[in-house]
Amino acid sequence: MLLGIRRSMGDWRGYDSVADDYDRLWGPRFETAAGHLLELAAPTPRSRLLDVGAGTGAVASALGDRQDGLAIVGCDLSRPMLEKGRRRVPNLRGVVADATSLPFRDGSFDLLTANCVLSHVSDFRQALAESLRVLGRPGRLAVSSWGPASDPYNAAWEEMLATAVGEDAATRATEVVTPWASRFSKPDSLRRDLLEAGFTHVRTETIEIWIRCRLNEYLAERKLGAAGRFGREALGGSQWLTFVERAEGQFRQRFGDRIAYGRPLIVAIAAVG
Image (cartoon, rainbow, N blue to C red; front, side):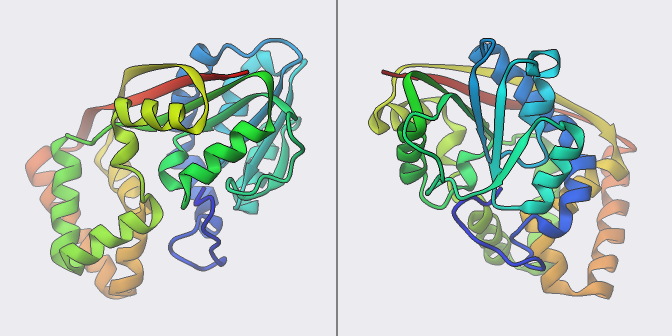
């Protein structure tokens, strides 16, 4: 993801070096989100579909049997992420591209999807303008975004990490990677920005996604997040391992071995033309 912000292979802000872990830990969750997105978007046979911020191919994979007859293009700034997606969905055409400067002609697609992506884009207004440009008339845009996290596990992790690396540093790290997470966690904000970009007939829906996993899986996900990647970089190997061990002990004492919580997913469908 990180569309509009170019990162080097070893940069903690990028996804190139974590593509395997991302696909293993987060792939199923983003595929679940993509399933809800596609249910509302309802792609028709022979549609030309562009998935912006395709990552490891969650949208293409969630299409299942509906892939037949569709021309599917996935674009992302991370080549390793796209390569993972291509291995899962062989007919996915992967293009390394920036959401703010899409390398496609005007009106090239019938449907554009952006699954939990807008929060990552450096200039979301330019990204929406590009989406509008490459869509045919009529065309549709389908986007999703996570709502605010309100579970005690996320609060505990953020508190522990802030203590280890500094509250301001942890907050800035998250904002660098997802600068618009707060903005697009609200359905009204998402709807307003889509209308201001020139889209019409915007429909939003909020769906509760439930996550159930073991403690070790949850902590692996937290380590993979933006603040976790920054924490590892800031603390260095030995201090990071010490922090993780301490966090696991505190989590186990407070919550046990099973994690279960809900997170809202906001889905918006908009028209053009």
